[in-house]
Image (cartoon, rainbow, N blue to C red; front, side):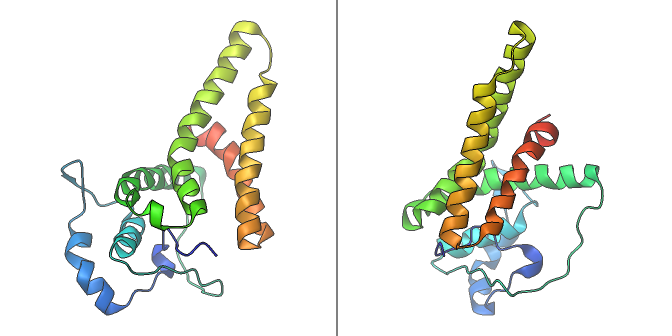
Length: 179
């Protein structure tokens, strides 16, 4: 629906051999700020493919088996690792964004600014509660509204109501990942 996928998930991704061969050197020698980087390889390869002019597509009936975290600690480490790769590869994707669907641009910007704004809003609400003794309902309502707008736009554009379920990630961010 959006004309590209920004991260082809490792276990589900398939690439043409000829396309991969063109990018193999760049892929194998990932650097971030002058240092070798070995996290977020699926997102990194996806961005390299898009930069090279290839398309990335979502196949809704694809099935793959993978190992997923089965407890909170490994899940949180996975989420932090994914956040680091999102931040790093956004720099690679900045030149791509004007060529992609506006929703993807909003999503990429939101994935990077969202956690920062969420952290600042949460800290401001906590400070208001500690100092003033009152609950910052405006903060709670703003966070909820922004979450629902983002998820609703994705659900509308993709014509799939399951995107609304992603709104549950906001409380996970606030109470588990931000701390």
